Image (cartoon, rainbow, N blue to C red; front, side, top):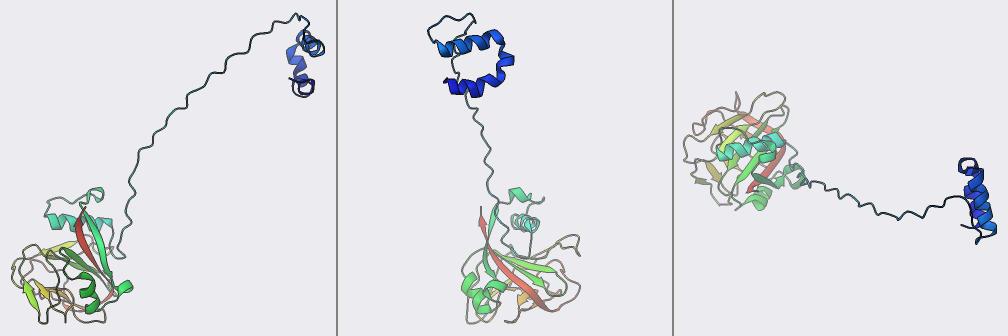
Amino acid sequence: MSGKDIAIKVKPYRQILGSNLWDDITLKIMAPDIQVSSTILPALPVREVPVREVRFREVPAREVNPSFIINDEHFAEISTWIDRRPSKYKITKIPYKFNLLLRGSRDGFTREIFHRLCDNLPGTVVIVKVNGTNEILGGYNPLVWTSNNSIKWSITTNSFIFLLKTQNLPNSILSRIIQPNNVIGCSRYHGPVFGGSFYMKNDNKLWYYCHDDIRYEKRLRSDAYNLLIDEFEVFQVLKD
């Protein structure tokens, strides 16, 4: 150390060092070759301290819910119905990805837009939010939608319609097909058609629900009439 460093950095601690050691330090600065009486220990080797490796468990980023209408619990419930499971999937165990094909508020509410965005894609879920009541109605089509010049009916036992749980409804209602004929209706003049029970009526957010359709096992609503909707979404169900 230089004399300046000793004066600035060491001298303030002279009382701790003791008078004998301080005198030896001063003497060593003036005459480096002279012998001193204080015991001077050799410098300790610098030991490198290993840096502990910390590993963080990678948690996969959770996909953002793609719907403006339903929540993760609803997606788990619909997945359970598709697979006909006796117990509901946990939210973290949903085996499907729900790919948003159409959102009315984003893409439009017309039949032409529905067919342009949703035709020829197997396995779709249609969901609507009813104006005034906040009811959430929907249906699952395991087949494809097509744009025929006249309505074409398809046969399936795997389609179903539903009314989802909300603040005003403690439990969801599932209504499966009991008569597989004339279940899914396809035509360029119609939007999605689930039998005579639930379908898009025209291009100005008007839908229809009928509780007397004998093709489905349960009523979703207590009455039947035209339904004005606030939102409309269609998802393709893909194996995750």
